[in-house]
Length: 365
Ligand SMILES: NC(=O)c1ccc[n+]([C@@H]2O[C@H](COP(=O)([O-])OP(=O)(O)OC[C@H]3O[C@@H](n4cnc5c(N)ncnc54)[C@H](OP(=O)(O)O)[C@@H]3O)[C@@H](O)[C@H]2O)c1
Image (cartoon, rainbow, N blue to C red; front, side, top):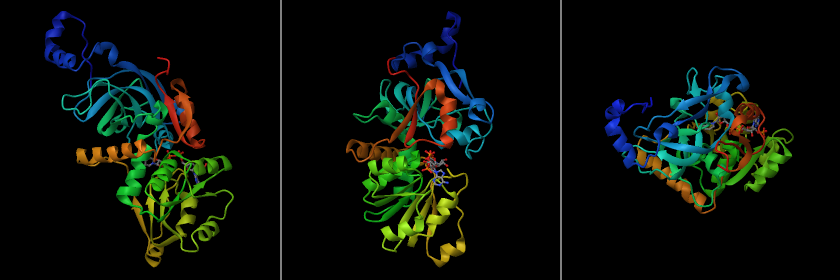
């Protein structure tokens, strides 16, 4: 995606159609508008070494994308996987970082349902190498919504990935029914804290698992019915106590490893584990014989958009509706400045409670 240089009158004719098209869409100065800085992975390694701030230019978005001036961008464990070369969906560097962002629309393709000036939040084109830790970001048209009234920039920037993943897990892939028992691992983390809220909004009884008193308090504040500490509690005994020996109906698992293996033992008959991630470093180890003998199943969850754009847009409007009703909100944790991105990524190995967010555009700008 290159950007034409508007340097000489002789060249303008070449771009005439383009220019008229842009003017219609209220562009002011596309030379300035699409140039800026972007944090990009230039080599795999430690975040301080792997990520570099580079000068970039952004061409007009093609169909299915919109271009935004980024104000905030949500962060999380995947950033660490990306800089370390452990993110399964991305190839070799260079590529941009930042899966989600919020800001003002500055350019749209002719068939867009958004307009220049709209305030939106959504999932970036990170899988195509264009991330959200940047002055501008391509956002997938059908994985974006207008920022609901009353949401702060930090809440908007940190909303899309966690809640779209929770929706994929708890509505689409392993639907949880009102009254069922839902156990959430990593419940104070980006993925867990959003699943906690969506689970409560869907009427589940939520048991949150977190690793410190501060994180336990955080989970209680976001509505957990019970909070267990995987470092100090006997998880099996405590779950049996809470469920009267029955076990849990669904485990939401962004963590994997030994903790997941332990809680799988507490699945009720016909229970399910939604496999979301591996924040512990390894996915949950499943034993098919055990699954057969105890009648439980495992469901993989990947938050990719529906092939039908209207179906995807409907998911986002349902999420927006839940925000407007006050049923869910971004559990904002630490907020970092734009120049702190490498440090922010390094700190995802031992994150504070809640969703980390990067402020890209200074709030006074
Ligand atoms: N499938 C998808 O579509 C999708 C979408 C988004 C993210 N993900 C994946 O989900 C995973 C989590 O991402 P995230 O952004 O939510 O990470 P995060 O914000 O860092 O949260 C992960 C949480 O896991 C907990 N944890 C780490 N090791 C643990 C262990 N051994 N036992 C118990 N808890 C442990 C930590 O809490 P404590 O300090 O309390 O232990 C932390 O709060 C990643 O693998 C990511 O790639 C998948």
